Structure formats: structure tokens, C-alpha cells
Amino acid sequence: MLKKHIDEQPLKHPSKRPAVLITGASRGIGKAAALRFAREGWQVAVTCRTRTDELLTVQKEILSMGIPCLAFTGNMGDMDDCLRLFSQIHQELGPLDALVNNAGVSYLGLFQDMRIEEWNSLIQSDLTSVFCCCKLALPSMIRRRRGKIINISSVWGICGASCEVAYSAAKGGVNALTKALAKELAPSNIQVNAIACGAIDTEMNAWMDEDEKNALLEEIPAGRMGQPEEAADLIMQLCSSSSYLTGQVIALDGGWI
Image 1 (cartoon, rainbow, N blue to C red):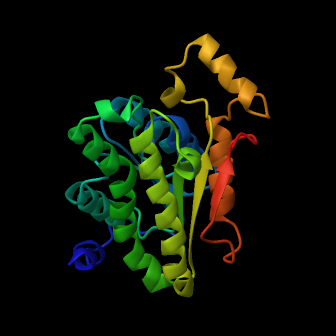
Image 2: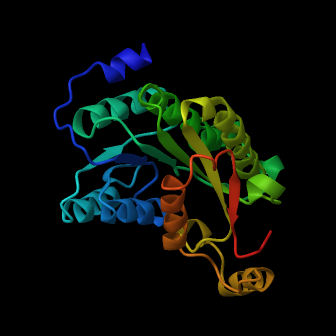
Image 3: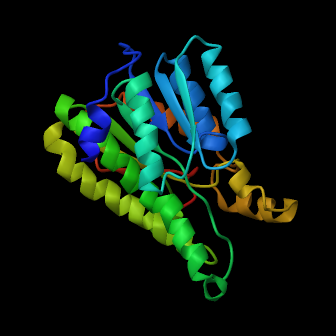
């Protein structure tokens, strides 16, 4: 039923340009990736959950390049919202060639202080969103026997972080999903990889004061935080990489972990 709902609607604006969906693209890594794909000539669909004004600014910048861009506000961890999104993508951009699962939130605090509602919300945003978007992107990718899926994860999904237990669990799930789905989709010539980001200079890390930030930088061999544009560069590379590169969780952390 999901495939029928999405794939049997007529296209309004078919295009020969490749199309990518980037979730969580109103700021940070998602925004940088959206602009990078647009500069490479890709059609771009971008989403956010609440920051509509910022997302529309991203859309406006992409449209100014002469590149089709669809902006959508919704919860990527909710299948109904995702169905509406993918219906619009299919009508306006056509089938996806790449999916970048970047949407997510963090929770900083003691595990015993976390409420079940906060746990469920984080898992929905960080892990269920990956399930929903992959689920809906795959029918057309499998039919055409091509596609790239890049999941934005974290080094905490590899080694865990004190006071970020739920976030670590969700990103660990993303890493495991990446490896398992890559094996399942390899016969269909679809590659699935993840980028385990370290300390990237985004709003998610803006809670640190100067002393905390300096202490963090002392732990990172590269001596600095990564930039969203560096993550965007790696995402773009993975979208043009060999079909033999799949099932990998690549750390982008300046040698930190």
C-alpha cells in the first residue's frame, strides 16, 4: 500500500537531474549538505520539524541557483508525515537517487532523570525517522537498481557517552541498521553507509562554555571542531563513491575516538 500510495501518482515536473532528500536541513550539517548538493546540480528536498522560517531560507538560496527545491515541515519519525512528504517529492522532483538521514535531537542529562516521554521522542527523532525514510525511499530505488543512503550518526553510537545514554543508544541503532540494511540491499545495487560525526561546530554543541570547549579541543588530535561543510563534503563523496563501498560507519572526528 505504501508503494502504491507514492509511486502511482503522476509526475507534475519530471526532471533528468538527480534528486536527494536531506532531513533536518534547516541548519548545521543538513543545511550545508543541501547547499552542496544544489551546487552540484541536484534537485533537493529539505525537511525540518519546527524551524520553518530557517528551512524556507535554505530553500530560497537553492532556488536562487536555478535548482528545484522542495521544503517540508514535519516529523520524520511519524509515518503519516513521511507519506505526505514522499508523495510531494514524487510529484515535484521524481524518484530519489539519494537519501541523507540527518534529522535528530540530543538529550544531555543523567539517565535516571530522563522521562519515558523524552526517551520515546528522541528514539523517534533519531532512529525511527531513519526507518520511515528508508522504507519509503526504497521501492523506487530497488525498481531502478540504484541509490545511495547516507545516515548521519555519531561517535557516541560507537563508544557511548556518559549523560547521553539515549542519544548513544539511538545512534548505535543507526549504525547497526546501516550495516544490516547494506547487506540486504547490496544485491539491488543500493549502497548504505553512515558518517559517525565527532564534535562538529553546530548548534547542537553550542551549550558548552569556553572552558568546556577548550577542554574538548584538547582531547581532539586535530585540535579543533569539524565544520558542517566538511561533513557535507564527505556526504557528497559517498554519493559518488564506488558501488563496492557499502555497510561502513565512517568516523569524522579529527582522530578523537
